[in-house]
Picture 1 (cartoon, helix red, strand yellow):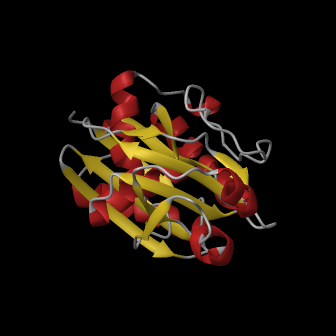
Picture 2 (cartoon, one colour):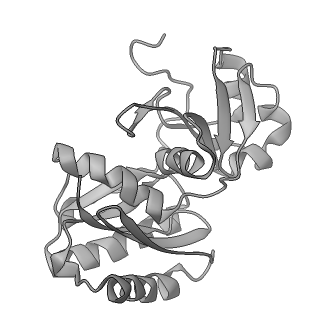
Length: 233
C-alpha cells in the first residue's frame, strides 16, 4: 500500500495531525484540551509544506470518528469535512479506541490491547483488539460505553495479557483492577493521528470511504449494556 493520507484527531484532550506518504509519516501532536480549533489547521499547513504536497494531491483524509468528547469529535469532523470538501477528498473515519491499539503496538509491540477512554458519568468507552498478520486489527468486543463495574462482572479470563491504553484505566483504576483478564499497562493515554493514518490505509484499500458530506461521528452513548461480538458468546 502506497498512499498519501492526511489524518486529524481532536476527539480527546490530545490534538494531533499526521500525513502518511508511503512509508514516511509526518506528525504533530500536542495536549491542548481547549485549543483544538486554534492548533489543527496550522499543523495541517506545516505538514503539507514539510512534505511538499497540496491537499489536492492526497488520496484520502482520515479523521477520528470517536468515541471521545462530544465537542472534540464534532470539531474533528467539522474541520475534516471542510478540508475534504475543498479538495474533493474521500473521507475515512477511524475509531479512537482502535487507534490507541495501534499506538500500543507502535510504542511497545502490543498485539492484544484493551482500550478504555474515560467517558465521565462513571463510564468508559471500551473496546478490545487483536492485531492480525496483515497489520490491521480485529475487534474482540463490540465498542461500547459501559460502567467499569459491568465490565468487572462480565469479562472472562482468557489466554491473553491485554495491554491497557487510554485514560479510563487511571480514572477507574480501583474497579478495573478487579477485571478477570490479565492486563499490563502501556504508555498510551490518547489516540494519535499517525495511528489513524496507518489504519486508514487498510480502509482505503478496501474502498471503505465516504464523501465529505457523509462523514459522521460515533458517540456510543446509545450502547450502554455489555455486549460481545456475534460468535464470541
